Length: 335
Image (cartoon, rainbow, N blue to C red; front, side):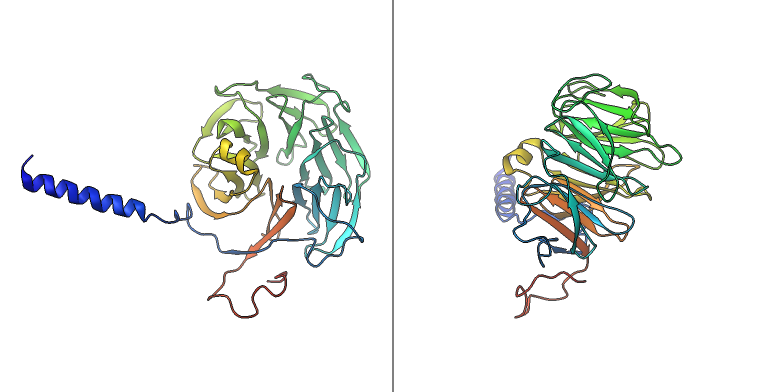
């Protein structure tokens, strides 16, 4: 290496080092999604009964009528609280029924399914709280066709099928398939890192073709199976996915973290909402948000259940300039 080459090498290294030192925020993967947010949906304005407030919000779901169902762990409100699409309190239920609220989904008939990972049960209710079905034995953790061990999530097969899936979960490492009446059909998975094995299957989603997407959270991947549990492929570039939501049009949304260690260390803070192409796994857009659970309403609004004790309502919109003098004086609940 001659003197000139050596000088150029040193100069280039210095420039690269300076650029690295000045590196700022990384761009939003797939492009910025332009949404605004109401960070205290259901509590600003507060229309719940006097003295009520959310504890840790583990899940949120919406029904075709636009109602918003919140599954929360605090003692100062019922575990399931229902609001209209603007955040007005409508009704609630569930006091004393759950060991530890975790997952919630609404099926195409409007019935509400929840997972209780404290008492090892899956329950189904009408939209007004009437119990319709209970799976699992209260307080018994096991691994057979009648029990769960800390189940996490539920997903529904596409019509005309009425089958559904349960990710089971923190204690077990499997996915269980049932018919509409709760009859056990099959299960797959065990603890591990190989294909078809799981380390906390935390969420499950099904697309219009019946493919089953499982968030294998502690293994930092999403595994994809056919309707009978045959492994098809996996995505390892999306981090530790907390929750998966797939719309009837196969629009896939996730709430995720860079990896499982960051997720647990930050207690679900510092996460990202991402929109994903179900065919390729490509990230189509992203934006920052804390969150444990995600739901996209029929109106296209994104609801996030956060263990910070919040429900976030993301709605399309973007500021056209900097904040004005009135900004921050009142909650922004309207578009």
